[in-house]
Amino acid sequence: MTPMPRAGVITLDGPAGSGKSTTAREVARRLGFRHLDSGALYRGMAYALLSSRGAESWETLTEEDLRALPLRLQPMEGGFEIHLAGRPLRGELRTQDVTSHASRLARLRPVRASLLELQRSAGARGGLVADGRDMGTVVFPDADVKVFLVAELEERARRRFLERTGMEPDPDEVRGEADAIAERDRQDSERVHAPLRKPEGALELDTTRLSFAEQVEAVVDLARRTLVGKNPHR
Ligand code: CDP
Image (cartoon, rainbow, N blue to C red; front, side, top):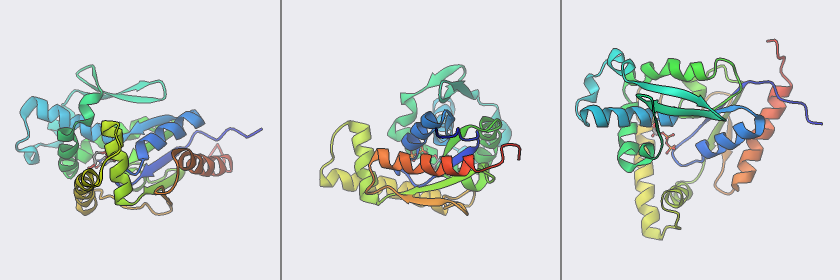
């Protein structure tokens, strides 16, 4: 019988379209952990601001202004939903408008500071698989298992297009999607606060030629080996 892993914290970071969220969700399900999609919080905040005050002058917002937004993480089966004023946000978070504004918003220090506590509270009791850009570097620096997921740009573009439209892209469509992804990666890697980078001690997993099942298995396997070997009373 496989021993049950201790309820630790597992982080998955990486560039856009590397498969973090889908992998994290399935890894969490396999381990009986909860999944936190931190990108959905940045998207949720972008959506909240776009609908309440438009796209202007976000640079002047203070941490206090942002904490006052009625944005919550609502625990649910397997993870969390993002609620705005008590209403769940779902499809609204995945529009291209929200996607591009989320990266712009994520550069701002008050934004990151206002979301830090919310993210940490999700991991307070362990049993969490968190995915994003700074999970292993800033939010959960003491995580038990850290993974950095990468994949070639064209493959990430292909997957994103397929996910968004349900169709295989032609070469022009791959190029268009790749340009948008590369621009977002550039913004996320070059920003001053919590830039996208591989956390120290993280396992780098290139998923370009892995199937979804293989990449999930690789993370579950690493988590099982690491968490079972650790002292649960640490
Ligand atoms: O799914 P995808 O990787 O395309 O994006 P996401 O994880 O939903 O994140 C949307 C945006 O939020 C990213 O482009 C980042 O700018 C920002 N983000 C961040 O700064 N830090 C995180 N931990 C997660 C997301």
